[in-house]
Image (cartoon, rainbow, N blue to C red; front, side, top):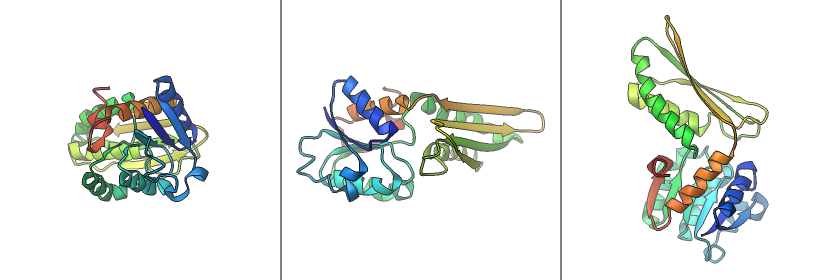
Length: 226
């Protein structure tokens, strides 16, 4: 595949490295190369098979719209734009392109979502729940997309709306903790990412999975197959 990676940050750079390791031809664009999605025209994207976006909440919406207009399949790992999710879904479904997004592309956190769904029943038995999330100081959005997904999963499973507390410090890759506290005991559930490589591998494999598919997908649609 010919893959275009948008974003030359720590995760974007790893995505490019993983894609090359898996035999793909890779081009990378940083923010200066692609202001207001200016580099994402149909002509410039003609030879590209898939685009992977790890940019910023500020840039991602224009990138999505430009890639969809050009008819290119797109994987988005950027978070912080989900207020526009319904609109983007509509644009994608009308266009006939393939689109896949996810708050977190690691296998471990997707298993953790299942653990959270099971543990949510505790809130119906006099447990008070909270979510804590920690990320590196440069992360633009708070709460994280992963923390918001955990809250939604628990709410759907139990009706409980858990408070999220966010910390931005140092170079923390990503830690998410669910604390369920009762008068008798406390349950601690934690997922701690050791490396950004898990995000990168998941994103590249998602782009491979998306080949030949059309429509709007979430990473949960594919992670068990991967």
